[in-house]
Length: 260
Image (cartoon, rainbow, N blue to C red):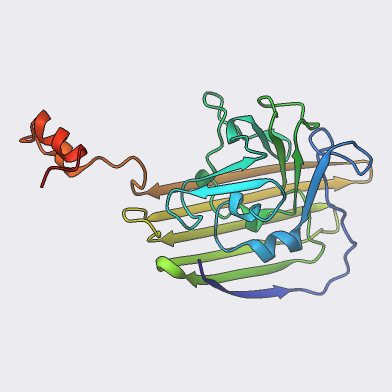
């Protein structure tokens, strides 16, 4: 898919301190831990971010295979690592499990444009260090959005590409204020016709975070809202089956390729 993006940034030059990125150590491996690990920094994520779901941001990492119902990475997507499907890949956002409680899968379509809020991501291939969620037999994917930008600013992203794809994102942050408070938010809208017939997507999301930092600790409240409306691009029902006048013989002939 061809995708072009125009980014407008505005930052205020104020007296601030560099703020190190916060991480959840219970789900992330260190440099000395004996695991196969890939770390993606915010710069790496932004280079790959073309309005597609998170699996397509990871498609160039080792042992990762991604697929898309719509054929271009927007809408319902899936991820396999070392041949293992998502039901055995532990996914967390800031240490909170994202896997579905029933199927153990991950529905990335419910969190569109999550890449715009990421400040880091770690993939542990094989059994890793995550202590929550389902069994991480295939891999562990730890998404981090807790990094704080030192300088306040506004970021607007307008993009368009193949198959009627459009993306509009507006993000803002206050930076680190004098009393240790910081605020940030993001609103996104992604629309696409899809490469496959009947594969349109209309996705929107909101992200917000309030954080308070002091010398010995930090408290952060983060909320993410997502809404998706996608057309049926999988397991479609043939028209002949939906026709009330069709007989079993008509359907059988159609399946065998002898029907008109």
